[in-house]
Image (cartoon, rainbow, N blue to C red):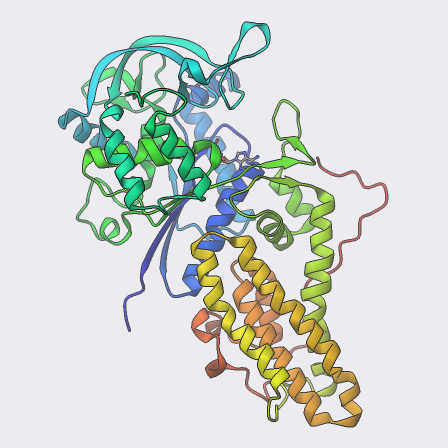
Length: 525
Ligand code: ME8
């Protein structure tokens, strides 16, 4: 058998001081769904997530909590592992930037850049936002209350003047533009690529400036090799995590050879510039291959309002799962909003999708078909006769779904992938109504058996394909069809692996109950 093809996907590593919120759950969920999809499609997947534990922001948070930074990060990093467990994420790696291996990797990258004269010592004088851990040009700022200056993200900036090492980013302008030209899919969606190109070309904000990559006014970071008065800028430290996880600096190792360059960095739109300008420039300068693709997703608002700690409307993923259970939440987040666009979270919309698409469309389809089989076919997979055009039409459409889904998933068009599956679900529901197997029970039992078999085989396809989105519920559905666990990957789609007539089936139970809101229920906002 051929070696499985490697696929390496990453989430951003999350600032460890924040409590996990819907933004974290969303980015990692998208990666998890794609990772599961690729695994079912025969790939060997490396899926990395973790926590970003250095920098001024974390140092401040530890000081506020009155504990040494290391003790603080050890404690709060566990919150993100917990999120991964509760959300059912199948990450293969969890990195912490305070891991000794990671420090080694960052130091090595720094040394290489220094040796190649890509880093030099100078003085920084400019605006810095601790919340964003980012430098801003004067032209990007707006005036806030009380004479404060604000970054485009709304975060306050402060004036910083200190000795600093700089990375010669300005030297990489042409090479970056060339890279974007040669690899038009490097940044997706396309609108984000345009944004990045315009920034690198220097439209709007002036020329691409060298980047300050060290700080001297605080201590919580990786010390600069041979100059420990400086700690590295948290972003050079953080971005390198993607390399550390592949064994860098050992570039001859099996892990690095198999998985670098990464196939996909999934990020939120706010951290686009770091991943599509600074990161490829660092890598090119160090002579390391650039990742294949960066996808920037949009942001959620909450019932129409911007989500912020100060407004107090942060959406807690743990509470959502408690209220609605896991799979509906996973489904909703990727179904509701075209991936890449901003979207609005509302409880009403989630309940609407649960009741119409999960309970009515999919749940009912499975429950109707399986209960009829249970009652009328002796609780066994029915024998089918010759298939009619209507049967073949449904069976073929279900079998062809995988081709369409591969393309959608490779474009991170999760919503389109789900819509394509729902087209078949709706088609199957119409087929039940048209064929009316309950009437055939009296007039033509063999035809009824063929109709029920056609439905079962269609549901098998749908359930296999939906596993990446709703793993628990689809496992239940496949159990009810008595599909063996080792026959649930995409190699088992198609007629060669069709359900075996005569197989005993367990008593069916509804997989997606309707969500009924209790009167006067106080919802977590
Ligand atoms: O940026 N909707 O960490 P972070 C959707 N440590 N996504 C949201 C969101 C919202 N309302 N709010 C936040 C960092 N996010 C760095 C990354 S990687 C080398 C270093 C997303 O904890 C946001 O876009 O601030 C980002 O992808 C992640 O959640 C938060 O990351």
